[in-house]
Length: 161
Image 1 (cartoon, rainbow, N blue to C red):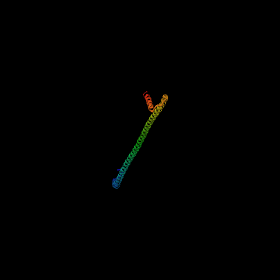
Image 2: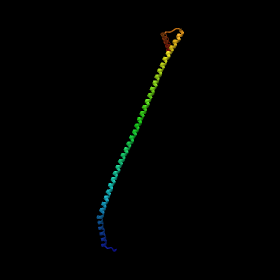
Image 3: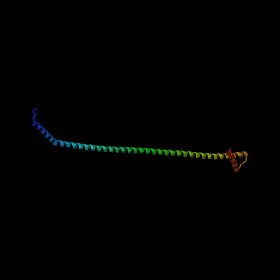
Image 4: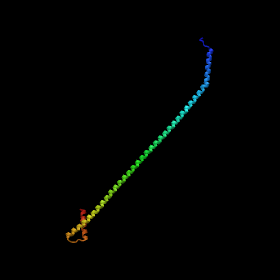
């Protein structure tokens, strides 16, 4: 043969088998157990990280919601303030318009009253002039009743004509 000793080969094979069984019992199971524990720790850490990430996301969403709510409330306050300011401005303008109308109406009444007073004064002055002219024309003294009658006739003609 090739010079191999079967006993020696058999001894090597037995040694390899013993070594394999020994290493399997001594190293493989503890290493496998260590790797399994490490994998479980890694999975637990991954779950913790995912849970914290979800909690952080929920907190972020809550803060975003609060921020949006605050923004909406601020916009509503501004909108209400503008609306109230516009209403107040409209009320002031309305009041000013009403005061202007009142002033114009009062001025018209005053002018009408002054016109009436002026007409009455002119009426009295015309009556006095008419009496004086009539007295000079007639060269006699006209009584108060005669003056009144002459004035009434004159004014009546002026109103009709």
